[in-house]
Length: 403
Ligand SMILES: NC(=O)c1ccc[n+]([C@@H]2O[C@H](COP(=O)([O-])OP(=O)(O)OC[C@H]3O[C@@H](n4cnc5c(N)ncnc54)[C@H](O)[C@@H]3O)[C@@H](O)[C@H]2O)c1
Image (cartoon, rainbow, N blue to C red; front, side, top):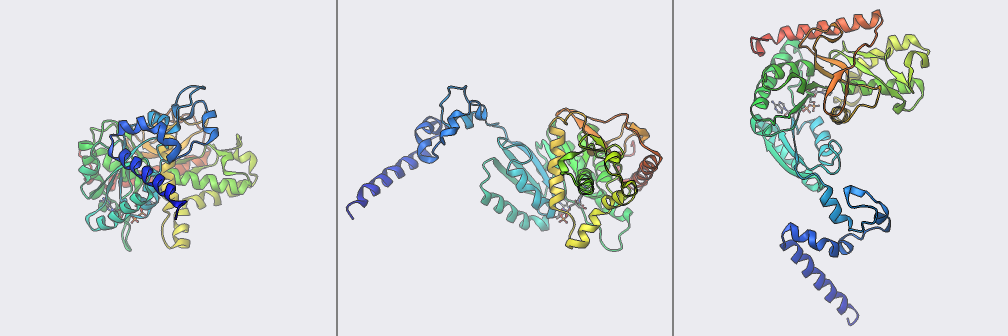
């Protein structure tokens, strides 16, 4: 009994200190942090050797990390709306956003999750799991079936939710059903999103869904709308790396042209392996011109065939990559794939939401100019353009007349 008494007393005193800290205002917590830091989380010896950690003081700064981290943290949460958040991609995506993988480890996140009424219970389960992850940067969550509410003040909107294609459905039926979702969502975004909103449409058919939403939101600049072709780029990079037997990081400059559909053109002609033209490194040109393109075009169906469900984790990963390649400067000489509004580049009709090779300086993006195509490349670009024009025709009734 005897020797345990001092420990119990110490534990009691520590308990009172901790309780007092929780009762104090956050500013007092900062004052007490230097005292508490060694108790709560001992600072590893090497931490004091890192002169610029987390934007703290200079080389001689011995301020405990707890304080310097708070000071260097972005304080305003970025408002991120995710539609279809309880779906497969949503489930693979929101945890990665909340963990800091999309906007960095010091950026607080406010997640605004939209679902249809019948899926709200499931969404509550997702929110419970997000709570249970105790992500330090997850500042708040909004769960709603009201699009205007979901997009309120949003800086980013990731439009994942869409109606799936059912058996016997024609492409025009699918477009009509989704037009019924993306038209109103465009209007809601224009009404309540922040002025700096950027929108990435994932739900299929994503190019034309983005087109519908964009035309229903003329208040939002056309350059703020994107549709996702990054999964196709990533699939292409992976196929090229496997064929050339090189790490995937050696593959660059992969552009996917046109529609996120089986008419897309994953462009190996302009792609590079360790800086060299792909056609110089991979000698099997028959594969590059045939099987490679077909594999990428039909990869989605192959995943469904194998998994019994469509791509979800890889799609969520491509969402993270798409946002990163807009928010950060593209490495010099490289590009990434995004479907953006055409201003007539490469003779693509103006206004189409078209997959192009795009580069960014972190703020602004542009379609990479002056890339060369062979006849086969031009034929493929024409074919996918034609399909997008057909889709545009099918949704005429879903966009305002002036378009
Ligand atoms: N662009 C790409 O590369 C790419 C890749 C994979 C999947 N997709 C597409 O992404 C979409 C989502 O895929 P998934 O596997 O997550 O599907 P899913 O069916 O698992 O989830 C979709 C979710 O959206 C919700 N939803 C439906 N209508 C909604 C609305 N009006 N508002 C808000 N939420 C709504 C559903 O309730 C569901 O939870 C599909 O259209 C799919 O084809 C695109």
